[in-house]
Image (cartoon, rainbow, N blue to C red; front, side, top):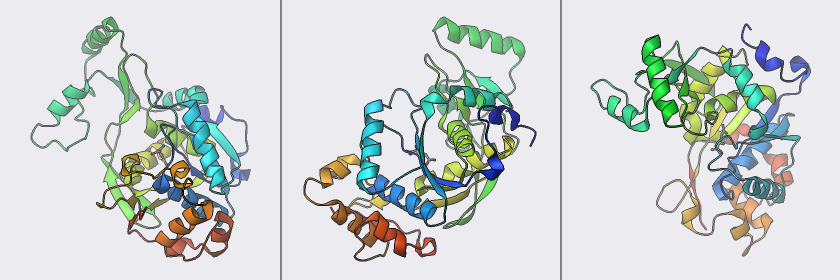
Length: 313
Ligand code: GLU
């Protein structure tokens, strides 16, 4: 594991002796709703049901959209639902670890604006949404001048991984083998206030927290190949992935806060926690389960499907 040294230096632990963990990793940008909380419940059931630790991570790398108050409310809601956990890690405390990981990776500066990337990806043969590689092979002189241009606007360049593959295959317990695109994705976002990128933070933190089981919404399945590739570059184990179906609204779209009374706090104005857990369990094919602990007694990972369920309100 040639690249793992910088990472390990940030925590003096015996990794091999660490009990593996499952996790839930919400972004603190508002209250959790029925769908988010159902995913958290499944993550807890999968971890506890397999003798793993269960850890939380407050994914507040996006400093513009995160708040400490929201993080606090999310933790309260998870406890109200009946979940417990072994630790909480805040990404805002993790700069040194991300920096150490970054220094072991091949990366380059990217000076492109969002508009530049959109225009370049309209070119023939471009794959929509994929970084076209504009800044990958710039000369030293071109880099210096672009860096100076940004600096004059008080901005710094983004940092991108110099990926050596264009796709990567992961195994998902529900979706089987899944091959997805890997491009030169961002490791640290540029601009006036650079933030660490989600993909880097997730992988470094899952490694640090001993996570070997990742349960999350299946909207993130397409991110898994990038993250698994990054894990291998960092000398970390690729976790077992379990991308679970989302909860949809009446129109068949992903449930969102604009769909009415969907946060736990709103739901509890008219019903009990038992009612909420029962509705979550019913959507997963379990009848009459009214608490997280009761659910743990009957839960079987093998019974999870990939079909989304609809929030009945
Ligand atoms: N923080 C991400 C979100 O709330 C989830 C990240 C993950 O589970 O890997 O959407």
